[in-house]
Length: 318
Image (tube, rainbow, N blue to C red; front, side, top):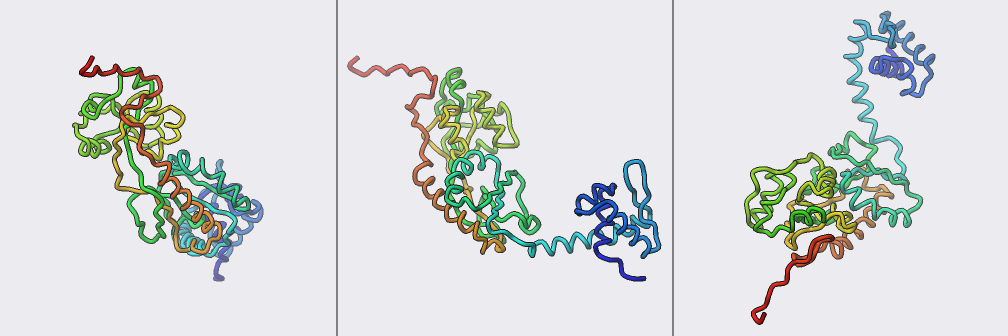
């Protein structure tokens, strides 16, 4: 029996996965007629019927199912092995990063980079999932927050971060501003694992009950802005909200985190011209931010927008 052509097996596997010849043909950039011809040729070579038609498309026969189970994994392995050798464009840079960092830190600065490198196309993939660069070969680099270095990746430290409790002006106006000693009596957002390092460092006891907990940073930001409670926030992420007057840091004290922000990329991106330009620009932005923008929040004497002035203490002479 002659060996089936590889392209015919690819068409067969695609049709089996889609269960529809039209969708399979579109994914392979073929016409339905061309795909049907491939499958018929494969069936003739094997002298087996691989599909039967149904109301929704096509369905594997028993012989088709056996063939699919034997070859699909091997074709996937071949495709994965060939990905690093696909053509790469140095004028296209694809980055992955957390949505919170994209919104609060990178995107506001990105126009400066685009102005310097107008020929470079930037693709930002914002996700909370950690990317496997061995599998996602179309992604050139990423911004990560964690404990570096990251095994198997080039790891470039950008800047550290710090956290402090923050609340909306409306909450402060409604409940007043807490002190370090009274913070535990106020409505807090998050959970004990988030707040315990703060109380261990600055005193007090985490409350038994937290108002609400969230599985993503953006939602917790929104809850704090709406006045639901006080959040222990990283200054990097809430800086735009503070600048806009939507959140207010409550203390001058800050908690240094044990994590930092990094640029990471696989060795295959070492000679990517677009990434090289981005890396140099990013390091300069990170240095400026660490030196100028990462400042202690307003002192305990500062007044939040809408907060009533505190009564002046009488002196001994009064």
